[in-house]
Image (tube, rainbow, N blue to C red; front, side, top):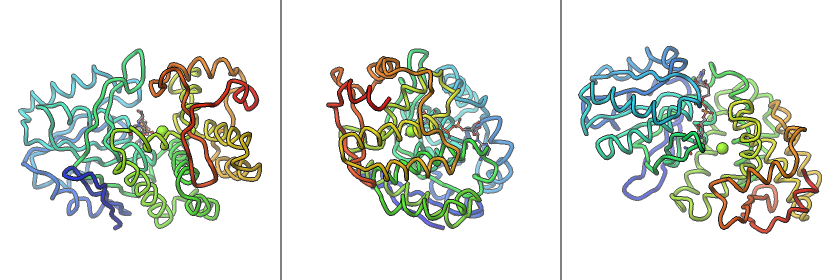
Length: 354
Ligand code: NAD
Ligand code: MG
């Protein structure tokens, strides 16, 4: 068992990382306040883990809400349906919600927790690599609006995050790879040693070696926790976590959400960000090749769709909600292991690399 703390004053919380889910009970239960627990999950994940969760929660009065699987259900309709379920179940302010699933379940459960009875306890049990290294940590919660992704939400921190390596074993290969894109992102933006560790342990990662994965997840959570502790509401440094995302969001929006997984779009977007940094002389050709080689090891895309023109990218980038005063913001590597935010990228630079 590894653990670390996200330091946010009176709403600090621990992240536990372990191999097989056996410690679930001893680490989860102290964070449950009353007797009532509602596990929010989906039709894919709940059948896999229900018996394990039930065993860990035998001392509590537990009910289960199963949402339909997929990003398309991260909506106000599902949110409303969960609220109805909670009220019908007689849940009150002392209820603890447990988000059991990937980022979709975590985001919607977090937003329910932030707003049900003006805020109740919630615990994240992320089951995808992406949610373990990214969405379960940091307190961003949201649902989508037809006019934009994550447009309705709140900053709301969980009481604890519980990560088990065990859950990676059933994850589809493509979802695992999408999570690896975000892992590689942390190496490029904040930790050259992590980047080199990934390069040196490709086979062990492909086989999901427990010790190697636990080390990697722990390190990614540490980096995210450190950045979030400094800038909880993304007014500054937290934006660095969006390396590859300006391009990535444009690809996702152009291709229709769901055709490219988010992590896949971020993978291509990181290469594009690296090429911009290369153009500016911050990193060299060999650094760009190392990033591409590492992404290739997980069958991740390293360029955008052929059909997308530079204008297509710009059109979507200008719509990005992170755009300030119509200047497009990019996170670029200053060197491998260090990223900076720039907002002076010219159209001609974009033309060159796209
Ligand atoms: P996801 O939640 O859709 O999960 C991917 C797929 O894997 C789903 O079909 C899911 O049912 C399945 N699955 C989950 N765990 C499994 C397991 N252990 N075994 C087998 N199948 C399993 O996608 P995701 O990539 O985890 O999360 C993406 C979402 O996270 C997006 O909505 C995104 O906006 C959000 N997100 C939020 C933040 C944040 O800071 N809040 C950060 C990044 C992403
Ligand atoms: Mg992301």
